Image 1 (cartoon, rainbow, N blue to C red):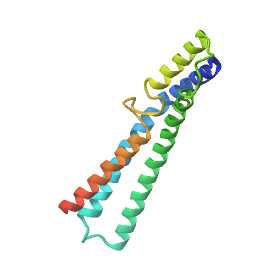
Image 2 (cartoon, helix red, strand yellow):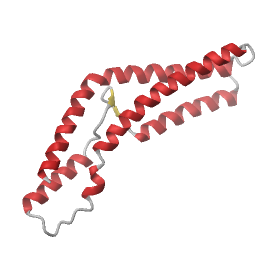
Image 3 (cartoon, rainbow, N blue to C red):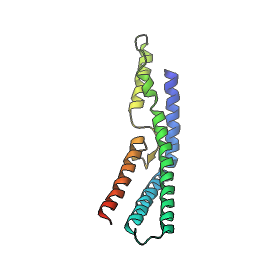
Image 4 (tube, rainbow, N blue to C red):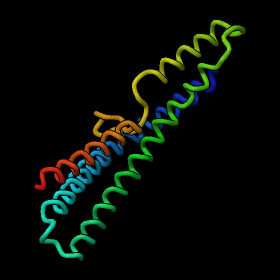
Length: 153
């Protein structure tokens, strides 16, 4: 158990080092892509009668490109978070009957690390990118789109 915990701590430190270098890049990408997605949706809905077919194709292309870029970035970051917390499923199945005190202590330390702050990539250190964040962002963009359609702005 001690070896597994130490390997996991090394991997968490590696993710933390990578996260320090990428948090600003991820933040800029999130902010610009979400803004561009909302702006393109607004352009498509607001100028529905004045856009030519080529305009719709261009806007649709840029919408798909921005959405695919932010999706690939988010899914990759969410997979890091999911894999970092995946040992939690197996730890709850460990038999504690034949464990020594030091092994039980190692298990407790491992559990506290896994149940502590989220491990993974963040947006400026504020929000850890998880599956839930991806669903939230998708819901925000869809809500914005449907509000645009409903009020026919």
